[in-house]
Image (cartoon, rainbow, N blue to C red; front, side, top):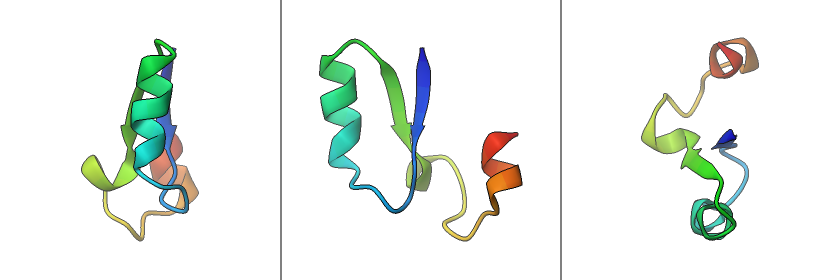
Length: 42
């Protein structure tokens, strides 16, 4: 399962999720910080 960690959560969640065998990325590393939800979901 691929997950995007929202901007209002700490980037440290990526490590926690990765250790639990989830593919995770923090939104700040893939998109603009002010992106609307519709952009994030796309």
